[in-house]
Image (cartoon, rainbow, N blue to C red; front, side, top):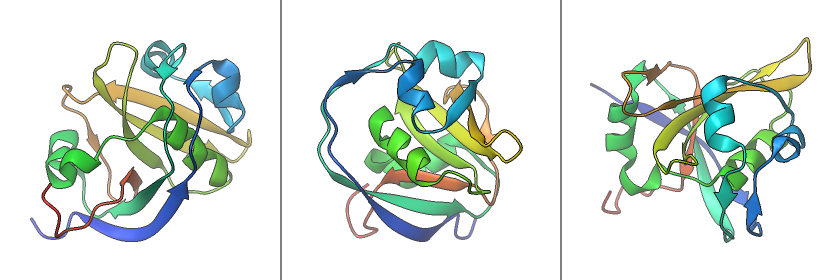
Length: 153
């Protein structure tokens, strides 16, 4: 299959207090449009206190199904909604799509993607459950917890 993810950079995501997400929670990082699944899963989500963590941004090198990415990342795939919000806030105006794996209100894992709408100057976000046969496109950025290839996945 070849290299599926290539390292772009690490990102130090600060600690955040426990929070229940809201429209304002997402608007404060530039989100202005939410598709229905994202809205249902990531509004009124109780996010526990999280510690400072190093996140890794990788470029997806080929079109992949979520199952392939999850297999590649193992236990490092999932990040918190607070850290995803942090990534979006720090990357306003970028032309890249940022994808991450987050747990929604029903505790199921979702693939979440955000892209910057230059005309509106905001992010549009979408989500789908990883049990669906969806995937991620080559060239998009994937955000996960830092992953050392020598660690057990």
